[in-house]
Length: 186
Image (cartoon, rainbow, N blue to C red):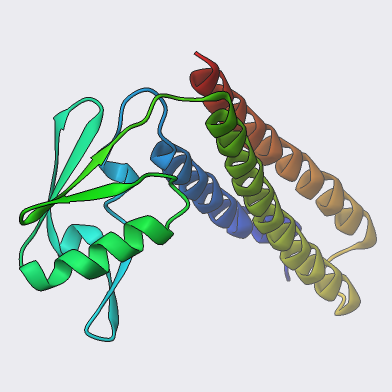
């Protein structure tokens, strides 16, 4: 006999993963000081394969406004430069001998607007993931009902509890994004 609570518990883990992913993505959005996490996961194409930047060189922060990337091999310079330029970070990398420097420009009003657009996109992507998992759980509850494994009143209880869970996670998403917006405005 299926239980709608088990179905909901199962997707809770997926919803939690979505929140953790959003937190990581928001951490990459720079505010007043640059963070290594901003660049370390940028996908760099080298030798026909994609690698996260952190696997191709040492990344450090010599000053609060600068990141220094020292590739393990000089042949990585061009692909790293290209990947950073193509990322949506809005930063211009500068090659300095065998390393790449990225300086954080001051936050202009236009850049803040860009950051808000990025935030909105990440928020909507996460909400889409939440909706997907809600649908997966609801489909499973309905299948259980049709198969006679879930009673009709439990089906509707499950629907209500599922919606409460989705609302709770949407609120977490909203809070995370609002917190980041405040950081950007400071």
